[in-house]
Image 1 (cartoon, helix red, strand yellow):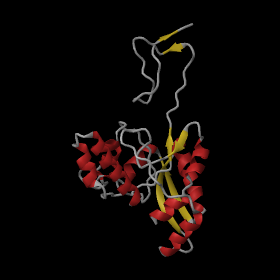
Image 2 (cartoon, rainbow, N blue to C red):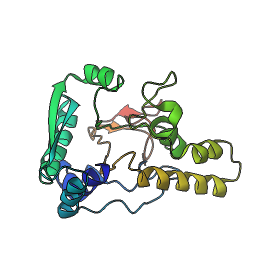
Image 3 (spheres, helix red, strand yellow):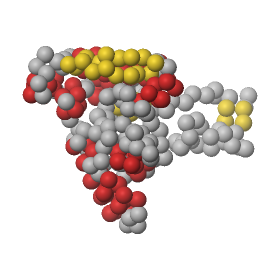
Image 4 (cartoon, rainbow, N blue to C red):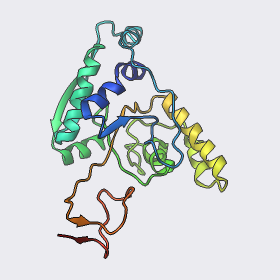
Amino acid sequence: MRQAIAHAIDRKGMVQLLGDQVSREAVSVIPNGNLGTTTLALPAYDIAKAKQLLADAGYPNGLTIKVIVSTHPTLSKITEGLQAQLQKAGITLDMTPVDHPTRHQQIRKDLSPIVMYQAFRFPVADSYLSLFFHSAATIGMPTAQTNFSHCDVADKQIEAARSEPDQAKQKALWKAAQEKVAAALCAVPFSESLQVWAWSDALDLGYEMAGSLNLVPDLTEKSRFVR
């Protein structure tokens, strides 16, 4: 079933829907540009293969999956896009829309078999691997975080990378972890949303901004308005 879903999602189509100036195709189960990100060979968009996988799984006429989704405008657009794509393969997402806080509460009770999730974390591979794909973070566990897929295939590599002093070896462990998680289809990455910032020409930040770890540009004692 996970294979069918993966092949039914068109990453290029999702980027087109969301806008190629503010989004880009996913390359791994963690975002591009993070320390340790490995570009993976993700499942190709193939509706015929998705339908065949469904038939092989005992659903030749397709199936319906009930999911909980957020009414947040940005997330609604994404989930509706995914819904339309999956429908082409015979996979119907029967979506129950709830307000954003309620959705977070319910998915943490393991009430949705599919969870569409966006995250912004410290840009190091471990931030995502530990929170989303280590068994200790599995929803329902006392140590639950955001592992909605109940993934445990890469625990050994994730744990070893945390204490590996040699960065080359650490990156190799992160690479192996990403490959294992992707092969098990613990998650189906499709697009990355970029942060969009706009400000008046009258605002002088006081420095040349190339990026920010915050969700907004940093204002410092050197920032000022000019006329």
